[in-house]
Each structure stands twice: as structure tokens, then as C-alpha cells.
Picture 1 (cartoon, rainbow, N blue to C red):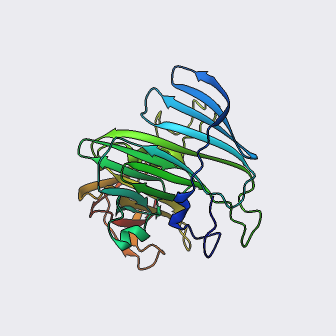
Picture 2 (cartoon, rainbow, N blue to C red):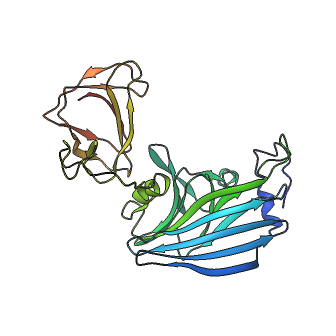
Length: 303
């Protein structure tokens, strides 16, 4: 519980840690799923006038532990966080940002580190030592703080200014714990972060034996460990496709191949706002190029 000195809806002052309240009132617990691919434990908690329901799922083919959370929140000026103490010693933590990652200290030994206790992370944050690490993924909550060996994620803030009803009511979100071998580049952090935020959607489709598609097909694929197709969209001013790729692990990538399901008619490179188009060579259905660490490349493609 805390009241910021200024900007109730935006600021988080560090002294909120002086008055922690742990949620301990467990109302219900039951095993909800015991399938061959997933098992789920359902927990329901009460906190003052609010209720928190969590479905904790483990998977056969993934190390990810999902915390699918539903909250009926009725509190004001209470900051809600989840915390994971992990058996890792590291002076640096890594946070996912758009098209890359940043590092921040896990100590407050200097005044500027002390001031940066809350850090933005888009899809995940990670704490790793030489041969082991733990990532905390999220699908819509972006405020992390990692101090020593404790990874924490901000879930709700419930400010009253300028909106006295902010955060009141129903919330649904998922965060996930992902242990992995080695540092985050050697684990599945990047892939699992995308999988949590853009899950595979399955739907029944009637078979068409005479259809033109092969047994397996896709719009495009890319080679290279950590190379991501981030954007596929129609061009703003033409009937062409904009395909944006980036290098997501901080590696230098040689001979990356971007392949399409159909032959390419023409390719241009352009900037992020689709300006400065320049012709780029292609061969058949693919484009080949190199990437520097965290480099972004945008292609305008006509198929």
C-alpha cells in the first residue's frame, strides 16, 4: 500500500516496499486438468475486497509454467506485484524491448541504479548465470524490477488520480516462468515470448482435395537462429507486401534466407516508414542477406 508523492497514475516511488502485504488467504485449490500434454492447478485467493483466480499450467513439451490469472480488483492505491525468488546470482538482468534487448543492474549500489528500480520489458525479462537462467514472460504487463535474485512483475496499480476508478473491475492476463539452460540466448526465451503473446490459433477447415496448396505451406519462412519475421502487412501506397525481419539475440548472422511460398516478382528495400525504396536482388522464391546484431531489415515484396 502506498501513495506516490506526485503523478499517482504514473509514478512508482521506491518506498512502497516499506509496507508490503502478502496475499495468503487461499479460498480454493483443485486440480483442473491432467491431460497427456498439460496439467493445470486452479487456485483462488481473497485479498481484502478482491478475488484472484489463477490456473497454473505445466506442459509436457515445454518448460514454461503459465499463470493464467483472472482478478476482480476492488482496491485503491495498492500496487500488486508477483515475485519469484530464484537460485541465480547475477549482477545484470536482461529485458526485452522492441527489436532487441537491454541490460540493467540487479543492485542499487549507485544513485542511477537506485533510480532505475522499475524497468520496462515487452515480452520477457531474464536473470541468468553461466549455465542456467530463468525468464519471466508476460502477455500485457510491462513493468519489472529485479533486485539480487528476486524477479518481480507489476500487475496492477489502482491509482485514483486522474481516474478514481482506474484498474477497478475484471482483469485477465497471463505471465509465465521459464527456466532454461545457459543464458537467455541459449534457451527458448525469445521463441516462448512470442508463443505466449501470439499463440497458435487452430480451427477446423473443410478438406479440398483439388486445392492448389501443398500438404504443408506458409506465407514465408526465415533461416538463422534468432532471426524473426516481425511484421507482414500490405504496403501503404502499393499492392505489395511489407515484410520486416530483425535479429533478436544479438548475434551476427551471415547468409540469412527469407523464403516465400510463391515465386518473387520484385523486391525493394525501404525504411520503417516505407520510404527510400531501392531494388534488391532475389532468386526464385527467396531473398538472401546478412544481419548485424539487433539489425532491422524491411523488404517490399511483390509475389
